[in-house]
Length: 122
Image (cartoon, rainbow, N blue to C red; front, side, top):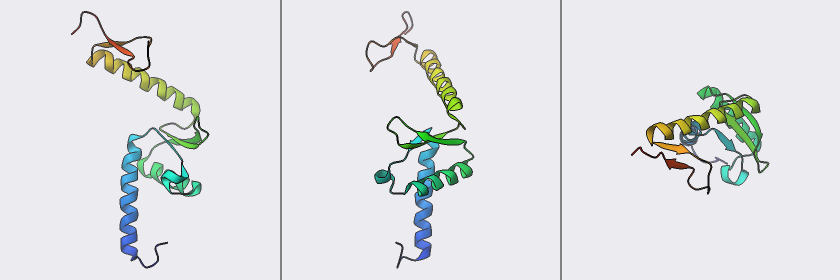
């Protein structure tokens, strides 16, 4: 596929792709495989994720998402740990909104706005 392209150019493009992809993955807590969007076979994608996790020293495990797509979940080594981390992350978000925005989480009347201003604080 790289026939006729000098090796130094191929290596440079590979590094640019890897660095950009690694930066994107640093922000993610999960990533699903899709052959058309990613342009890699499943084996290549798994190898890419394993290389990324090893280089960035992130724990991970593979599973399926609700659409039955292979998915990698970061910062956990199994589903039980993943669910625990997600609960803690949700609680951190609620504390952030309550302390910085003066808003308190309520039972949603609609799915758009789940936070309301605390009365007496403005």
